Image (cartoon, rainbow, N blue to C red; front, side):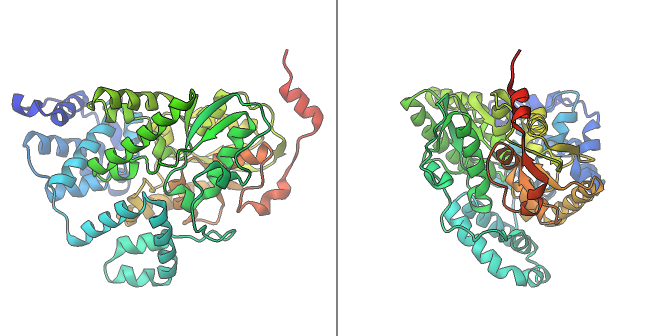
Length: 462
């Protein structure tokens, strides 16, 4: 794609980066075939190619973001399916992030949109605030229809997404230490093989703390000391993808500095992340802070280099044969941030198969479920359309349950169907000796212990 930026414009690092990305696009249109919003809307402006033209015009003209540009950029999920499809390697992820920041800084929004976005960015990244907001949303759930009728569709979507797990009361305080997560002080009788940092997250400890508990158990079971620095909170993904660049960088920098301090005590083998939306952002810290002072840039690059999804790490180490076997049919839903953002395809599937689960692939597995961070709150109609499409495809294969690697997908899918949805690591923890994941109690009798002879065969070497 030919661009027409002036030398003065290209002196701006943002514009220089945008120019480089724009020039790699050959406007072939392959991306339209895998873009969820284009599949739903059929509008070229709601496709990656169409948005690229809108962004090019906005950046070349040094214009404030128009209402049209803001509208179509906001409707992008940042699922990155287009990047998997693109034969030219267009770095759409960074281009659309640049555009989101420009829209946020120069565009105009109505009062309702401003308040909604401010509410989300001021609440969700902070577990204490988020917990209180979730309690309020649960209380307001009977009034969701009324909120929608008076034009507060985004608030109605937030209220409808709030779900009180039937298996437990909402915890008053999110577990942020190993002792709180495992109820055993974090100790383990297994010989220590290494040390890992673990991102507990901001939304996940509130919505589904069991996932973090299972993650810590798995890591300790195989000999890894797990460290959760108290000062680590939100990774910055949520605010960054809302175009709030400064807030996203501030969250990210606090996280980087906290992990760097932890590294000073002893070597760190990996940074473990079990929410793939966070993982995509953390792995991008090196790019995010490439323009920072040398010390911060080096720390950010170090974090990016050793950050891994929990399934990548478990696939890398020797976990051996499971302690339990099952006849359960598991539909594996590959979160966009994992398959497109991080290119982690095989490890989750390999681990689940080795653990004895029968994996079934979901039709149109490359298409987003509509969660996409805050998308299901800010774009509820499009999000619901994608969720319903995904749920219909899951029902076609009639699984016993669904496994996925992202808390957003779990929340989104569970709101649309009765088939239970759990995190991949919770199933692995169950197979390797942990408790039955909450919500799967009705499937407990489909799982049995592995005979000692089978274990011996599974762990023997030649």
